[in-house]
Length: 425
Image (cartoon, one colour):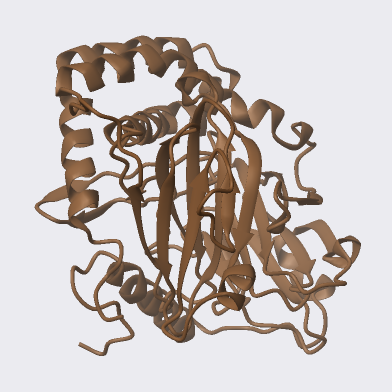
């Protein structure tokens, strides 16, 4: 698997259409109406919130345009959408699409289907695959919400039934006729299937994924661009309202500087813990966590709208390969606006407040989630040495430069149209 499985003709077509859609006068007018509503949100009253409002709105609008660009259940495609950082590739600059504390370790691809249709999804894993999940959800009206989960498979499930070339087929349909060993039984209505590759190491190559409808409807005609734009405009108020309000309900909107969870993911494919941070310039948040032997672990922060800052040049996230462990196997992270000289620094990018998220996936059987979070404490930055465990990994300035340079190199590799990288050129 040398080719980039994200760099596909279907991806190019969806992005090219979505980028045209968001520049249409009618779609821009709908965006401006949504912006006026957001100005009344409490987050918009803060400095960070006002500065970052348009960035968040642009990410939500492009995510919706991408969803609609790949919205034909009679002719579905596999398209990478949210958790999708800005990048130049194909023949355009893609400004990024994200929702809900997007994770730079993730490649979230979407497949729209109809509950009455029959489909076949082909997956091929690389030799060292990221943690993978495929989840099927009933789609809410206007795409505005988290769908109701009706099934899921993980990397561990699928590899157990894959062939010698690491290929596996997932069948989808309203009954079990012709179903293979991995089958999603559907319900009537509109459905989204999501695949997620979560890189424990940014050199890991995502899966190849393709879809075909086995019973295409007769008389099918592709939608016109005007029809798609009309749907984007109709869906935008509910879509923006939901993602702008996600922060207000997520984990009960906890008090800052604590983690809530770990909570199990619907479908049983992992755990998450999250919360808000609020730091003065002379404060740091110290968190000690147990990876618990999970195939994937990751820590991310976002702005107050739940959109992550630049993941390429700033350590706003750390995954398993990027994290240095304590002698006892736990990991200590320090959230702060200034580099504390600790290996596992989560850079807040000078945000006064925002969100943080920890994810565990591919968790070993028998692991106790009650032990995943060992300690969370707010400290004065000049008191870090007094609270850090003995042996907590440190880093010098030169080491930090190397860390960020390697981060930038591997992040850039995902936009290559040919080889994925662990390359030296």
